[in-house]
Length: 315
Length: 266
Image 1 (spheres, helix red, strand yellow):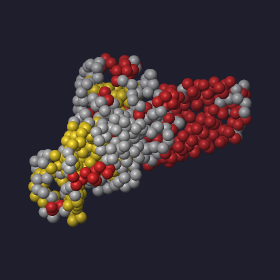
Image 2 (cartoon, helix red, strand yellow; image 1 turned 45 degrees about the vertical axis):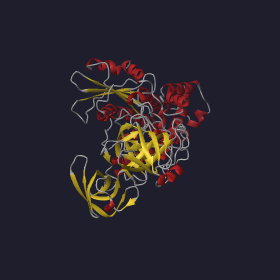
Image 3 (spheres, helix red, strand yellow; image 1 turned 135 degrees about the vertical axis):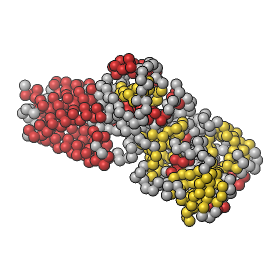
């Protein structure tokens, strides 16, 4: 049984149950909308950035005076190299840029092997849909990463943020404190009737394994036979089962923005992380969704910080 | 004869108090955006009115329970009759307008969609309260003289309570329906094919095999095409052996929808 159109599922489910089918997109009540813009830098000056978008059109955007950039380290926007791929957070209908992330990538998966003496080469299993990935940890970043990854050995989880250079991912910053259990031994969710967790809160992260400019989420709690994903349905956050095509209402507790985001992929790897986000407060354990960079940025998340505290509902 | 009339009073009082407690607990724990549990008549009013409506309803129940317990004044007795009669109407309306919502009668335990049993229960309660109108004694006097009729009333209510099955499932699985791994798709499909809704619409379908199936929360959906290439979607509740089934026809071009509601087999 294929998935002729998962978009259609939302309409059909809403019709069968007589409820409103939600609309994907930001909640109008959550302040000035932020727009994510992506592209390749053609030219950059202190006040103006010219990019080529993935559709091939050229766009000129104003850089706000308070704008900051990240390219492996904090940088001035004007210092970004021409040719790098950027994701930007923009205000005023996407015309004024206030934050730029250049060549930023996220490396999340289970460690398969580690080799090398100074610069470490790590092979990761990024889940059944995403395959294997080989990344490099430069010597200057390895201490910092290993402090937050005490079980730096095959079978354990790895999550870092870095940059892409010449087609290779360089891990630079730890994106979380590594969970202390092997990737296959995810702790069970808390008993549902313990009465502690009346709303579903947890941490929301991002991944660059989505299509460019896609707005969507990978959600861990999907039925295995429906998705053909043998690793789905694992989470330590006590999540309800949803389907590809369901609309998640995600509320960023740190920035107080909320948006409806469709579930577009199976969050097999996200479900294995039973960690917390300490972005603005300490969140309950467990990743409740993994967003595409566009959705993440438009909800007010910072790609470099790697997560925000969130609450979910069904949109 | 007098024992007959007053026998149901204690049950009504206990139920009214339970209703108050459950509603207050739901309001106190709620308030999150887009709550996953869509409960009770509160889904029929706008968001900002939900909490006040539930609190007002809980307060009304408490006043009536106290009145029934301590006095024989007819205002409380007729008030109880009106309350349960109104509840019956509200549940019928809820089932028509929001077939996915639970009755919320006992807070979030009552999350299974409103079926004939929930409605039967409010009808039974209405009958009981009508019986109690002419009872000569107050509630507490009736409560200290239990009778077989009282036990029979309790048995009828238990038989009409879908919450009992949910409680048993909770003890067995330690998780609400939407967090449990559901039965296999083929099992749910055979439950669908055993339902009255399926038999009523089977003839319209172009193929007996669904072209898409997915699970969301406590429902599994099956999408079919009919002879005019419209989508026919069935939703089957995942808990219970003879689950609630809903269906709608959505025309192929339609991205919004004008659902066609059908009677339920619950």
